[in-house]
Length: 417
Image 1 (tube, rainbow, N blue to C red):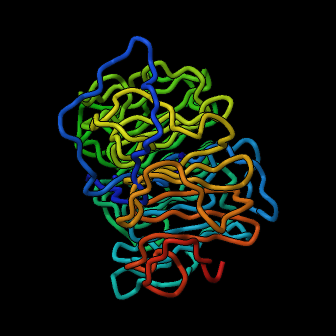
Image 2: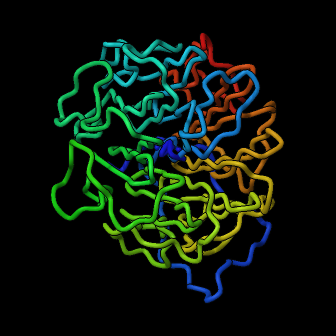
Image 3: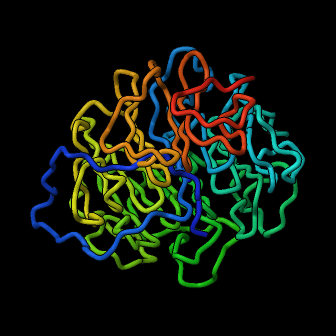
């Protein structure tokens, strides 16, 4: 999902595309070498967001009228979730498609019968620069720095001061201006303020809000103990940030070493990712996370099948390099059980498990060129080019936006954007 920061009860069940196991050997990285936890790994029942995940600073793509100004560090123009997807329009609005059981399409309706196989406009939005999606909610960041959310709100993930679910977008309390980036996890949301401070809200059952108090918070809460944030990713049931210093920190659940801190103990306190000093952007998925370093190298940690190489260890609790992605990567988006990387040459490579298909190592997605933005969800991914938005993967709820419910291994054009 990058600050799409960006993917949720454990569930962003948002993201499951591809899996990772490459016969290309990679010597696990750090020196002092921590020992990977060797007890059995697991696949997520549902996973983050990815969009879930944070969206890295984007370079302006040809024909992309919604590219934000440089004051918006982590803008995402597409947000792939589990059963629905959203995207910015060239007019600065948002359209969503797929499941609408909880009103996640944002068009003033809710219920499975109101789901849509093609994009429908989210009501009451204008001048949007970024959109993110969690398990069943979504949020938009406006050019004035305000945050509006819609969809499910059982854990206060909309930040409107309650857990009620009025149809259509509502304001996040206290965030009418001054926000620079947003990211949605499964059942929580986070925002970076101008200056680099961080606020989060929604479920806190795994410490997503970095507090020890209540099980959920329906208004934005300060996250302390971190350096100014450069990139944010609210993931499945954890969060990660890359700081302006190049360091990275994660907190929340940690059953597969997805925090990258050298063990599997969970923590409600932001904790430094092991030997991470040059991170530019970061993205968390179901039970793994990845970062793009200076020079364009990708390193990942957590559940081994999502790390892009073959290994007998079920998980790596510290960052390891992804083979063939030692340079040239601009952004990475971690889904529930897969990851995709956007390269400087405009192509996309993915690895992991996509809709039941195992992709052992970073493999180019055929038919994609000139990609300017990327989002991975649960069993699907989407990419933006000058020609529009294309998605591939699972489609049982119409989340590919091609007016069918037929899955596709190859990118298909989203209609009506």
